[in-house]
Amino acid sequence: MSGKFMIYGATGYTGKLVARTAKALGMRPLLAGRNEARLKSVAGQHGFEYQAFGLDDRQALTAALSQVDAVLHIAGPFAHTSRPMREACISTRTHYLDITGEIDVFEACAAADAEAREAGVMVMPGVGFDVVPSDCLAAHMKARMPDAVELTLAISGLGRMSRGTAKTGVESIGKGTRVRRDGEIVALGSPPRREVDFGQGPKPAIAVGWGDVATAYHSTGIPNITVYFEASPELERMASLGAIGRWFASTGFMQRRLKDAIEKQPEGPTDAERREGHAVLVGEAVNEAGDRIVSRLRTPEGYTLTAMTSLEIMRRTLAGRAVPGFQTPSRVFGPDFIVEFEGCTRRDLNG
View 1 (cartoon, rainbow, N blue to C red):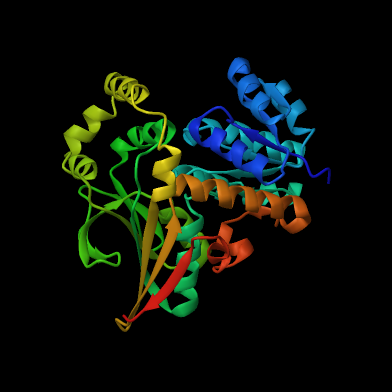
View 2: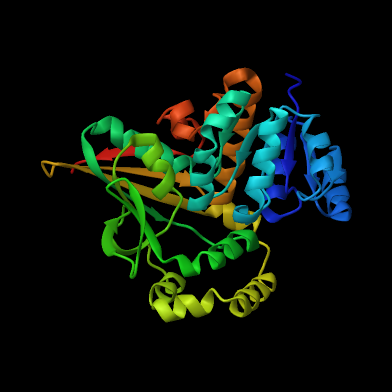
């Protein structure tokens, strides 16, 4: 292996943060994306090489991938960008990592398992905050309760979103609240609600269609999975949309309006906001007998953690620790992978 990797989508909020972190770690990625002027600017700040091309230019994409051993794909929404990059990676025998949190993308990657194995390529979506901490927590709950039949994950502390994350959320409005029941992903008409203790007493939480509805099942085999976010005014407004409201918000006209509004927002959290922020994740597992266990995980702010985990997974991939086929972080690196990072602590609580 050459030990060289590509960051595709290096000019967005997360891409620039990951590139800056890579420089600090002494890594030298090839930066790539569609906009040459922006790429030149970002690459120039760090002394990195860069290449500009769109994912619809298969010849340029294939040529660029032939220069690297792995790609860290950061350009979303991944519902539109994952497939062309993943297929090109498999055809060029290039390991594929991305930072998606989109259920359908995880499931599409899982469906490509046999093809990736045959090519000797690891396909690991979700190497950032989506879904490294929650996936590792899910695997930890499974290790604590091997006979668990129900898994609940709850997340608190998600601050300001980047524009890319917000646009991805807008695209999912029409899909309802997705959960896993008896091993199958289903959409609920209205989101379940409950209270969760994130460490300061019970707080209201609302179910969301987070990536672990897909990945936690592949990592643990637990058939019933629900993911909650701590309730916020924005989430409450989303949850109050009925079927007609979700349909209207998913029309082309409203999607354009909503995305135009997102473009007027700040690019993402400031460095100070990231330093001051943190997230708390709670895992709860229940078995057929009704026994219940709970664990709590604290991590740095989400975008900060994304830069940390994605680059460490890339480092291990380039060091020969990739496992061919569709993989989740915990399946390859174990449930304790997350607590290896500075600022990540896990505590097992009484049921």
